[in-house]
Image (cartoon, rainbow, N blue to C red; front, side):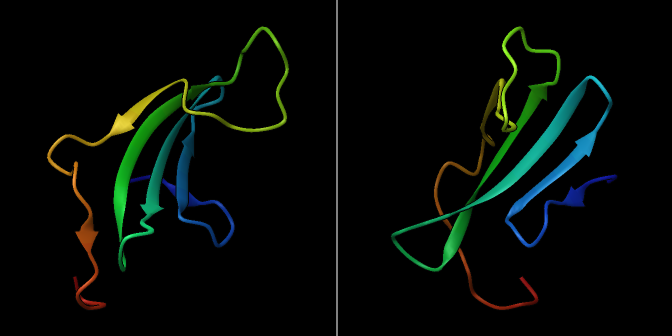
Length: 74
């Protein structure tokens, strides 16, 4: 899909030069599993920033609840 993992984190992204697709597997404090968040970050912001942010993004529809870890094959 063209995504690259950011280090060893749960964040993956695809750099398009002036914008960035971000995919995050957000861990849960309630159990072993994660939520799926997808967004875009504009890289031409008025104020410089030292981090990447979701300028437009959300938890993916249909995945509002926690997806529980069951096995590596899952």
